[in-house]
Structure formats: structure tokens, C-alpha cells
Image 1 (cartoon, one colour):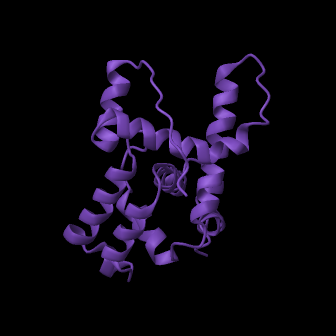
Image 2 (tube, rainbow, N blue to C red):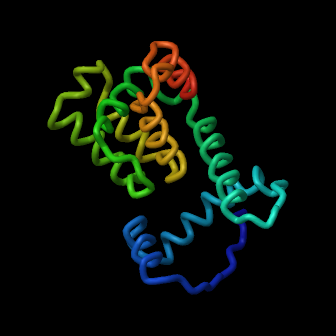
Length: 173
């Protein structure tokens, strides 16, 4: 039996409404999806202590969502698929604006226009289907992962060990 859903109303800025519409077509559907993703991760942060500093709490919450989302997709991607994603996002400014829809479009275009599926011996259309099946949080975690992959700001990050740790995060070692 399906769980009963209850209506909920809230006020948001025009910018937030626009983001929700971009995300899901309508603000209401976007809000429903965001709240559903959040509810799945809320159990991880319920025990977090509010210490009066909202940015500290939000950072802890974001880290928890990132870790949980990476854990949820662990083992779903091959090393070839993870390499294709990293290659696709090479040179992309990693920001919260790079969400699931853009990741899917970038990977699809990378395979179709740049032959990245063949380059990495990965099935591009199957990878696109996997990405489409992910939640926004899971796709966002992959975008963050790709940003970490390309972070070569220190000598320590310019090593095969660094790359191996990152692929291991995805279970794609």
C-alpha cells in the first residue's frame, strides 16, 4: 500500500523557483524531488548537533549527503565508465550548477561527438541510462568526484595513488 502523501506549502524566492523549474519542469515537482532526496539522507544528519553556526551544520550535512550518495553508487560503475565521466568533465567548472541533467548531457555528447565511449571501451548509451537512473544527489556526487579527480593542485594529488584512491571510492578500482 502506498504511503499517504500530505500537501505542503512554502514560500521561495524567484531564483529558487526558477531552479526548481529547471530541475524538474515545474517548481512543485522540483520541490517534491528535492525533499524526497533530502528525506533519504536526513537520517544521517538527525544526530548532528546544532552549534549555533549554520554554515558549520550545513557543511556537515553536505559532507554526509556526499558520502552517502557515493556509497549508494559504489560498484555501479566500471573503471572505464568512471574514466569516461572524468574525461567528459575535464575542463568543466565544477559548481552546484552542474547537476544531473548537465552530467547526462555532457556524457551523452562526449560519447556521440567525441567518441569517448570507444576511447574508454565503455558502452556510452548504457552509461547514460545508469546516470539517468541516479538521483540528483548521486549524480552530484559524481560531479564532485570528477572535480576531485582533476584537482592536481599539490604534488600529492599528482600521483597514481591519488587516482587509485578516487577510483576505489566508486568501487571502480
